[in-house]
Length: 109
Image (cartoon, rainbow, N blue to C red; front, side, top):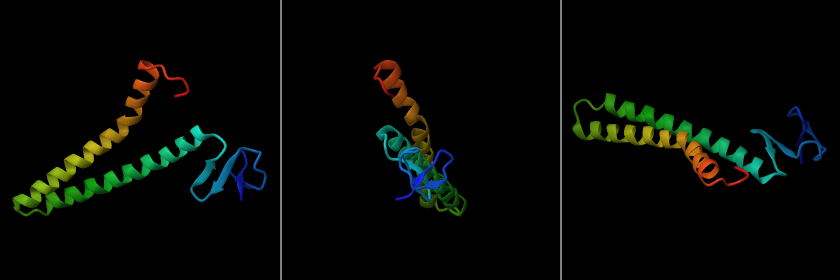
């Protein structure tokens, strides 16, 4: 296995940072909270990219509907769903921290 040093370069010493060297970056493997944060960061990025592609596809449906009311309605619904999902994704972390840290006072969040 190849690990990361403090600057993110590959090394064979696992005790330097406790991170595994991969093509997508240094993945923390010693702390479960850091690992979850890394995975969630990537998942949010991928979900945001998918939402962006859905917005582009919905706009394409609306533009090319050419008076077809069913296709126009499908494009509008997809656009609304994609924007709603993106907003939920963006505000999800904020809402969870608000509930967990400020309202319920859960330590470690």
